Length: 460
Image (tube, rainbow, N blue to C red; front, side, top):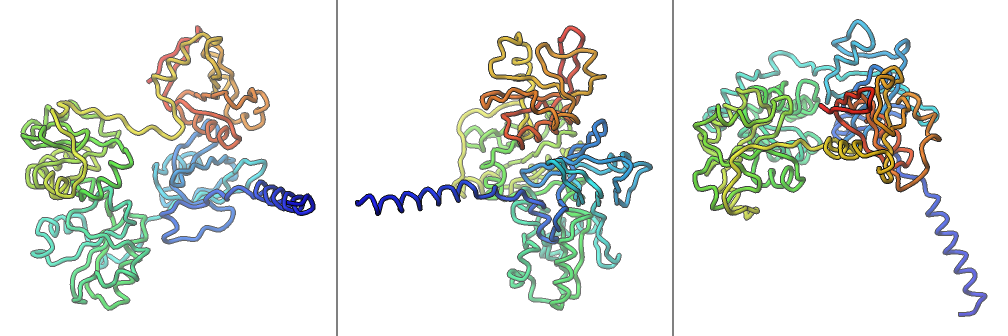
């Protein structure tokens, strides 16, 4: 190829590469996916679910699916709009339950988002005769659709339905309502009951109104939704749903197999369970506070599984489900099974928060002499009045509120792992998100830690 032809080609390729290199990073999401079903989010606003709150450093986190946003706030200027307002700004923030939907109006300067308004999503408002109580739904489910003459609809997106649903429910997601109208009863006088994710969820009221507009005259909303149902009852999961939503995603789950011949084939991780020994079984269970997902499996999804599942619910465990059709349905679908003797005791390790380091690994690293911690820096983000009582040997102390302005004090080594910790894990996670956003290789200790003046420490 002549040199005169080659040079323009090289110039074009170089220019194209430069343009690609200069392409801006994709914008960060400003709303959780589930929020997009009902809302549009304006610039300077973020919609998601409330997460950790750190009153000591005037900060809180909002979760957007797999992302997390950190907000600062000024006690004197922040407005918290909630139907359960507290006496102070901090009381109002503390009253927001983890996982509750919020909208945050904020300003941003120097990469720091400062919340101006926090709007807590209120309960839906419906006339009494348009709703149906938990007790009434329980009676219908006990009868079944044929005897009870009802059509129970879960309006949540399919991924949520797959994690567990009210028995006898069908999934007709609200965002796809107009495409699924042929799935509704032909009889416009039939009883249709809609539910979704709880008292603040607008998807079931939205489906309710659309059904009425189509001429249905006996439509109700179970406002408490799936959270209300799980508080007093077990749910069900179809084999395909469990495989796709739980097993394939490696979500830690307690699987109780009630069959006497389970060793001839069972779901991976299943525990051999005697349904007549509930008291002994519960002694091996983790605390209900951890809310471990539980799947109960018998031969055909029958009475033994339902009874044990209900016993677990009564013992305080939400999120208990029965496998629809039992092991026979799982096997018939051709899904993977394991052979051999099953575990005899329940073990459950919750999925760690993204970016967290295990207590054992942190203890191993922090117990080493500082000179032996190869490419690791322990960053203590507690306030100085806390750190004065003792710090881990070799740790660097930078209080979390000052970290953004003191990043220059951290070594600029891409191979360096920065492990943050505070007293409880909340501020350590805030620091972790800041460091990740700035390009650092980081992790955090999600645990309570006590450090004495010798540098020795204990973890909760």
